[in-house]
Image (cartoon, rainbow, N blue to C red; front, side):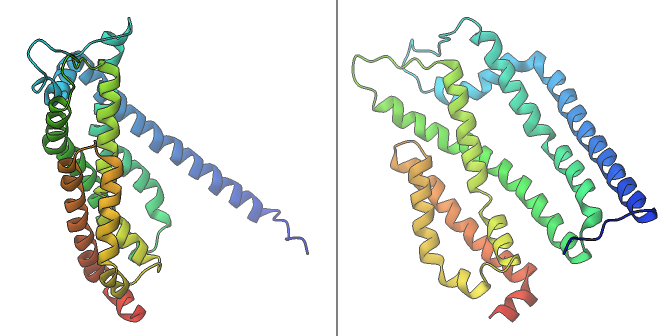
Amino acid sequence: MAAPELDGPDAEGLEQSLFSHLIELRSRLLKAVIALVIVLLALIPFANRLYTELAAPLVSRLPQGAHLIATEVASPFVTPLKLAFYAALFISMPVIVYQLWAFVSPGLYRHEKRLARPLLAAALLLFYLGCAFAYFLVLPAAFRFLTAVTPQGVEMMTDITHYLDFVMLMFFAFGLCFEVPVAVVILAAIGVVNLEQLRNGRRYAIVGAFAIAAFITPPDITSMIMLAIPMCVLYELGVLAVRWLLKPSGANAS
């Protein structure tokens, strides 16, 4: 049987509501884009300095006389600008997330808001921590290993664009891997797992952490361990977060 068609005041009210939501969405997205552009314009004059800092973990470990190279004509200009854009997106992400939250939150229930707020804040913080962990600890260890195993007679001279792509991939991968507690809480909140299953699944989480670390990190055992161990710790933090935030649900599930 066909659904009844809305007409009269009901149809007009629905259309106005949809139109107002679209206007608000456009306004939120516009504010997010403006914040991104403002930060980008502020960072463009420092683009070359930003790239120098980004390349420091590799440059400081290259053999004497070795350096980064640009294999394309426009790379010395375009690559620092790409980095400035990535940095602007990184810095303005709290504003972007807030605008999306301000658009979505009116449609959530009170208990959903109470859970979503700390999850969003934790997701941002953990992503930043993952990127910092990769830059200050993992990349130096990985580059130390890669420069040490370079065959004799081969000069390590990395292209600046390839280096930027590699580091951004590492930042993104480590940032996502550090989201383990948030993922655990979300899975528990939607009923996929409960607290008892999370506790019993520790051994599988450890194996999965080392498998993911072996796939993501450069081919050295140090980098793999440096990612796998934090992921195991973050899994335990996720279990604790489920116990704190979802205690009634966990109790009912068990």
